[in-house]
Image (cartoon, rainbow over the protein chains, first blue to last red):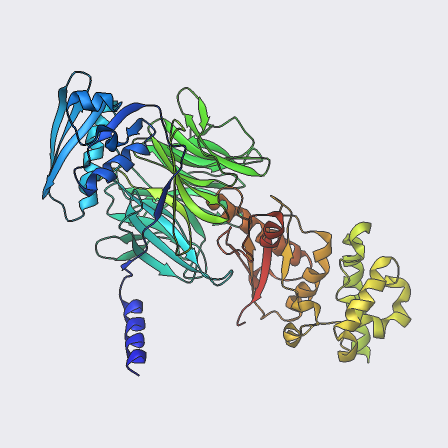
Length: 409
Length: 199
C-alpha cells in the first residue's frame, strides 16, 4: 500500500515536473591501439584528476601519454626525460587545482596555472586539459564542454526514449526528456543553456526547446506540420529546421522563440539537416540531384551551391570552422568523413560499418558519432587526424544521435 | 432489384477501370481485392466484362475468403473485418526495397482492400506510418520514410480513398519493428504501417 502510494506520487510528479533525473554514466573504452605518436606527455599522478587530464589529452590524437610509473616518482627533468617524456604536467590539488607544464628537454616551466575549486571536480581537470592543449597545439581545447545524446531502451516498438546531457567524456549524465515516443536531433544553443530537439510526443515530429536550468519547454515549429533537424544559429537568435509538405521537405529559419518562420529553400524532394557554418552560411542535405549531397545557402535563402562531390551519398553535416564532418554511405556501409571546406581535402576518420550522426567538437579536432559496436549502438570519439578512437557505451540501452556543445563560458 | 443491378454495374465499371490500370505482371494481385465478393452475384451476367485476365481468378479467391460472398453486398469490406485475423484487412504492413518508395506488386491487393474499405466508409481515418532501416543519416531517414508513406497515400487515392481520410507520418529509423544489424532486420524495418483511428 505504501509502495503503491509512493508510486502514484512519483507518477504524478513525473507528469507535472520537468524530467531532471540522474542517468547512467557512459562507460568509456579507449581502444588499445591508442595513439603512440604525437607529443610525448607525462602527467604526474598528483591525484584522481590527473587521470582525467590524461584521458582527455589522449583522445585528442595529438599526444602519446607516458606511463608515469616509468619515472618512478622522480619528477626531476632528468628522470622525466629518461621516462621518454617531452613535456610533463606536475600539479597538486588543494581545493583548487595548481599545475605546471614543464618542457622536459630544457627544464623550463612553459606555464603555471590555477583552476579554482568547482563543485564538479572533473570539470577542473577538463579546464586544465584545455589549457595544456592550447599551450602545446595553439588551438583552444574543447574538453570542458558538454554533449547531448539520445538513449533508447525496452523492446522493439515499445521503447522508452531519453534525451540526456552529460560532460563531453560521458560523465555526469542527466536525463532532460523522457518519452514513450521518439526523441531525436538535439542541438545546443550557443550559450549551452538550452537544447533544441525533436519529439513525437503529439504523434508527429515537432521542434521544441528545453531550458536546462529550469526544465521549461517551448514549442518552436508548427505543431500541425512535421518538422525535423533543428540547428541553432551562432548568435542564438535563430533556429533553422526542415518542414514537411506532402513528402517534400524544405528548410525554414525562425526566431529562437519560434516566431517569424520563413522558408529559405524551395525545391521538390528532401532539403533537411541544416547546420550553420557561420552567421551567413547554412549547410544542408538535399536529394535534388538524386542521392543526398551537401549544399549551402544563406539564412535568407539563395546563393545555393553544392559542396560535396566525392561519394554518392553525403549527409548529416556537422561543422566547426572549415571542418565539415558528414555521413558517407558507400555500398551499404556508412562512415564519417571530414572535409576541409576550403581545400576540399577529405579524411575518413571512423572505422565502423554503420557510423552515423557526426557531432564535431567546437575546435574541430574531434568528432563524436554513433556507431554499432558488436551489435550495441554506442557513441565513439575520433580525433580529426584519425589517430585516437574511444567508444562510449551505456549499460542502460542504446545510445545515439549525439550533439556537441559550443565552448562553455 | 433494379437498385441492385445498378449498383452492380457501377461496381463492375469501377472494377473494369481498375483492371485496366494494372499492367499484366501485377494484374493478379492488383485491382482485384474488391472484386471477389462481386463474383458470386455478378459473374453470370457480366462474365465477359471482367472475367478476362488473371485478375479474375485471384479476385474470386480473395473475395470469398473475406466474406464478400456471404454479405452479398457486392464485395464491399466492412470495418468489422478489420478485427478479423483471416481478412486481408488484417494485413497492415507493407515492405520496401532499400532506398526505394515504390509499392511492390505483391502488396497492391492489400492496399486495394484498404482503399475499398475507405471509399465505402468515408468517416474512417488512417495514419500511414513510414519507417526506414538504420542505414544512412538518421534525420534524412525521417524524410525518406515519410516519402514511403506518401507513395502509399497516392496509390490508395487512385484506388478510391480520399486524401482527407489519410495522414502520413515519417518515423525514420526511430521505431524499428525488429532489432538487428543485418538485411533480415533491415528488410522488416523498411515499411509502412496502416493504423486506423481509434484502434
